[in-house]
Image (cartoon, rainbow, N blue to C red):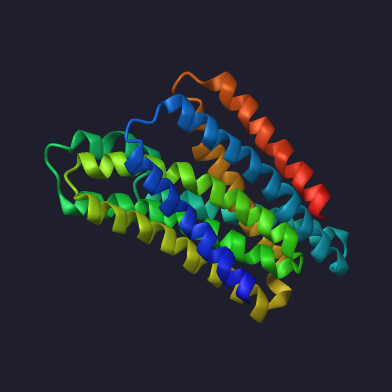
Length: 255
């Protein structure tokens, strides 16, 4: 339990680290941000496949191949649909960061900022759950690598949310607190995922696939489009491949 708690704090704390970097380097180039985010996408892509989707099938195989495949596929699509519904219920994360708050920087409203933070927090919850669920597999080293991939993605996310909030008129202190709260949501999600599979181990195959589906959705719907939107497509593509390979090597060596 101690390692799970420390991991939860690390995953959530990565957003805070990104926020601090955002304060220090207020004018981070899109190219640099895209390269870092794309590298994180590659890590998460490999982690989703090797650490969540494949184990989902393996743990479900004791019920027979057809059932195991059905549970894994159903879990992946359920996770993706869940995030799709979240996107419809709250403003899209990148659209808000890039347009909404910037358009209103001369007319700051607390409701706008809270809506922005809520959108980020809701997107962070499934990522935290994915980190927590991965510990249910019993493979601590693999779970730590998955959590590391999620934490790596949180750093550039923490970096890019600082500018819009500051430009909307939010004080530096409140901006830091709000950014930290988005990381806290991920801590809560990690604990939810861990306790859910600990209490009801029979849901582990579906939970792993669900977590994998949420990560695949985030990568495809948000991270890749974001990293290919500012002219750094080639570098972002190679960064994704590098992240995937780093995760692959880590998984093999630590496994």
